[in-house]
Length: 161
Figure (spheres, rainbow, N blue to C red):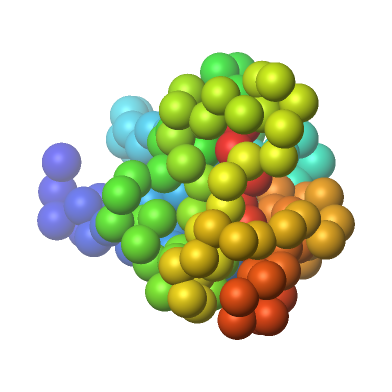
């Protein structure tokens, strides 16, 4: 693979999530695969939620990067396997926390939700678990709005799934 293609792939991997600009689509796990075959860059992405409004922006960003370098590009959105918060790496989780969003636990480690209980969510400001869900939907469909009972700060929690 030539240097130009590698540069374009690196730029695509570095596209920030339009709704959470501190992490990239790769760190979030939305960027599933990139191949270069027969003169065409093929990119596969997966939404965090079906109908995620950020998908159009992400696709446009990918195509724009390729077009700037005169590279043919196709972007395919796949829904299976469904995206999971388990695809968010530890470094990206820490970036979310520092940005003020409580990162999700690994979905498989959160047994409370299986029993119909709210998850134990740490406040990204003071690290307290004395928090309460205010609304199941936060600033976006993939986040819930919480409030910390210790520092009284509202914050988004990236829901597990």
